[in-house]
Structure formats: C-alpha cells, structure tokens
Length: 323
Image (cartoon, rainbow, N blue to C red; front, side, top):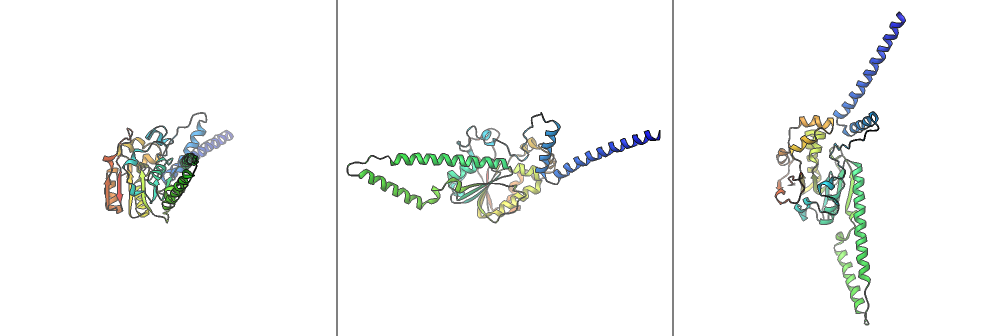
C-alpha cells in the first residue's frame, strides 16, 4: 500500500514540475516583450505558432508596420514607376544638394524617387526590417540598370551620324559631345549614378546610437504610429529628440503622422502594442505642441491642403518642421 502511495506522490510531483516549467516559460516570454525586446518576442511567437500546428499557414503579421508590397496598395501596381503623390508637395530646396534621411523607408520606393527628382547630395533610407532593406537594394539596382541601359541606347543613336563630304556633320557632333562633357563636369552631381546618392541600412531608429553625421532634411512618413505602439510615449519622444539633434541648423523635418483612429485598428498586432495603446497620453493631435514647445523646432508649415491624388485610407496630414 505504501509503495502505491509513493508512486502516486511521485507522479503528482512530476506533473506539478511540468506545470511550473510551462508557466515559467510563458512568463519569460511575456517578460521579454514587456521589457521592450519586441523583436525577440515576436520571433518566439512565430516559432511557437509553427510548432503547435506546422501544417497551418502562418499569418503575415507586421508589428512595426513593415508591410510587404506597401507601395503596391498605397500607390498601385508598378509603384516604382508611378510618382508617389506626397512628393508633389515637397520643395526642391529641401533636397537639392542636401544630405537627407528617410526613417522607416520600407522598400525604398519614395527614397529613390526623391533622389531622382530632386538630385540630393545623399539620401539614406533606414528600416527595422532587414528583408525590406534587401528589397530596397533590389529596386535600386533595377532602376540603376534601367537608367544605364537607357543612356547607352541614347548614346548609341547619337554616334550614328552620316558624314558629309566636308565632314561638317562629324565636326558638329564632336562639338556637341564636348559641350555635353563640359556640362557634366560643371554639374557633376546631376550625372552621378543613383547608387552613389542612395543607400539603405537596417536599423531600429529608437534604439540605435546617435551617429556623428547630421542631415539637412529628415523624413518620417507614416511611421510615428508604429514607434508609438511599440515603444510608447517615451519611444516617440526619444525619436523626435534624436531627429532634432540629427538636423543641421535650418534643417527640415517632414512628418506624416497617422491619425489616432488608425492606432485602434492596429493595437492588437502584438501584446506590446496592445499594452502600450492603453498607456499612450500624447496622441497625434499633441505632436505639434510637443515638437514646437518641448523638442525645440522654430515653426511648422502645413502641406496638407496641397496634397492630391492619394488613395482612400491614405489621406493623411503632412507637416514641415523647421529647426
């Protein structure tokens, strides 16, 4: 009888140990997420989901707004060929010959378009998602190749000149070519390869160290919601403060904040976002006051009234804050 009781006792103890281990494992995962290790927690969640039901198709969750094909449904099919409507409200002097930073660049479409249209000195696109950064480099190589092939075809057609008896046409062609060469030396930045101007980098802007380089123009387009939901009010203030410090005197911060109602739609993408959503005090309506009175920007220009051609659901305000 005593032997049977001992077996029951040991079985009960083993069961309790297993329960404690399971609770401890879940507790550690929850602690990771609460402490702000969102990337690690999201990865663990994906692994758990895959193990629990390997045959079930994984749902593509984008906890940082790191959507695949984002520009496809924001602009439309062939997004790399269609100009983003937001570019129309930007001013040439903000970019031409300037060093620029695009925070949350996604696949880099608007970053590349800005470089092409306004001839930046340099523009760096950063995103938390390494996969999107790879895609941005792919788009950059594709566009550079297309431009290179186009120039080659143009040059080939220009040299096919029929020489007349006196050689006057050949002489004119050489003179024209020389003039073009002089022009490119005079304005060498206009003839640079896009890959010399545009670069991309995987980076968590909120958590990364402040670099030594400063910028003339910084863009943050439809990114603040994801910073806010993942790192709360403190993370947003950190981001705004870093942007101010990264700008040169007289620099411009171009901000496209998402409205508060869109926060509610995305608050449940992770445990962290759901928790932070309820703790947020500084809603988007307060950003102007925060940036002017707390962060230190001198003035703001509202560009929204000039914006047109945006798709439904993307009619968002755009502001230019001046340091």
